[in-house]
Picture 1: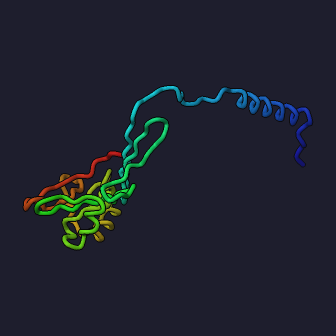
Picture 2: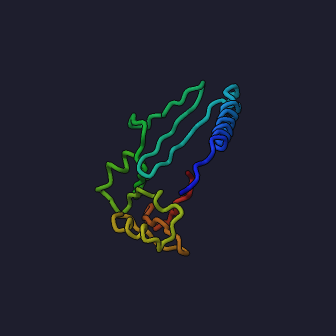
Picture 3: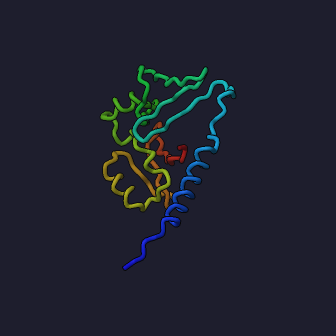
Length: 155
């Protein structure tokens, strides 16, 4: 039969635990210094499906509306013969030239061309992904010329 711990042992453990908790509670909390004025700060959220831009000024953050009046913009680009469409315009024009419309580009970041997950994604994309030195590159026709683009790790 196992011996029960003595009351003095249990009391000692309880006292030490109490002392540690009290010490933690008495440590001053670190916090950011709100007195600094950084002026106007711009933040960009480059998302896989949507992106947005925010401006911090005067202690407030405002999400900026795009040319369509929306505060989020689809992370889409369409490469046309004469122009590039971005966001809502690219998404709306998708059916006119699916192979020239790029979306989900953030899924390429940090991947190798032979990544199994990337291979699964590629089956669902209408745009072409090519192998350049083991890295996936998006290939589109831009102004009648084939161009390769890589997805850069921004966020």
